[in-house]
Length: 130
Image (cartoon, rainbow, N blue to C red):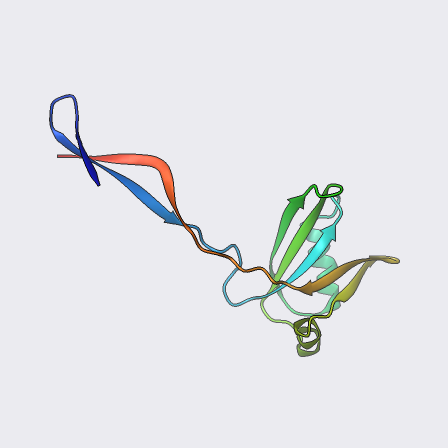
């Protein structure tokens, strides 16, 4: 904390507040990753298609926009739990093809996302007057 003086000559404390950036992954979930989903695909569609696979209860779906090569999304799906056979298959480093439209499919793998928590300073400051 640094000390400055206001117009009346009274010392005023200025403090920067650090913020810890938390992981976007819900606690206690099993996450899978779909590296390429077309722009027109919705959260409801991902929930429906993966829900019909019967792997387990979906807690959250995260879409990450990408413009690499052409516009699309990378999708992370977080399950409360996953069937043992599917989990073992994904944990071994293999993929699962989930067919969503005839011969079109999403390649699903275990998520390798690791969040690095960082402490960042917020630009907003506040003053404590005496």
